[in-house]
Length: 277
Image (tube, rainbow, N blue to C red):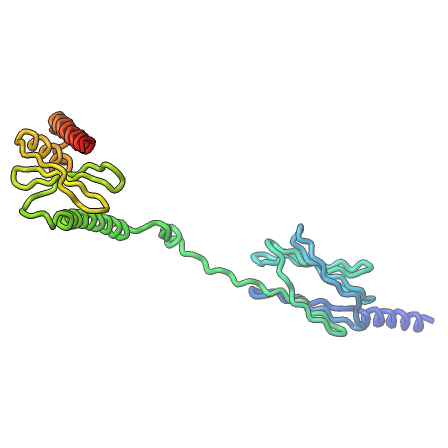
């Protein structure tokens, strides 16, 4: 009787061990691999994710018992791994920061779960980290020098172009007038009608310019009137007159007032002459 009882006990132990599954873990700096090996098999394998807890859960059904103690990891992307073997088997993988998608390979009596770890970034030298990196959005000193040099060049070019055009248009406008002289200034009567005051010798000619042509309207030979007109237009158009404008403002205002009065008087004289005709 005792032999039969002993035989039954040994048979139960061996039968129980024959239906045990095995879980092996291999964790290193590059990956974490978990391999389930079954004697009879498994079914209903599922993978679930709990993003609020940074956890992946693997569930499956098997009649085999699995023994796996909780494993905690340090300096690894995986925080811990543990198994609950009540009724339905549930295998938990907790992550420290973000969930790593696993590579799952399933066979008839084996499940392989691999978590490839991301490569660690090389540590930055403390001395190099203390040196602030150059901001690419901040222009360098050479950029400022080039910008200022370009601006100066453009200003000089504008002044040269102004004087060249001024001389060109003066020569072109009065190229048909005999003798040598100079343009004192002009008065715009209309959009396309202007009076030009041109000096030849001691005489100032008033020339009317329209779309149809150019005519001599009047000439001023009186020395006093000519001097006032000449002074006003010289101060107004001469570049040096602009430079000394604020030093002699009172005299310039008087000259301009006198020249404007003379011009207005001449214009009224021309209008009255046309009415009489």
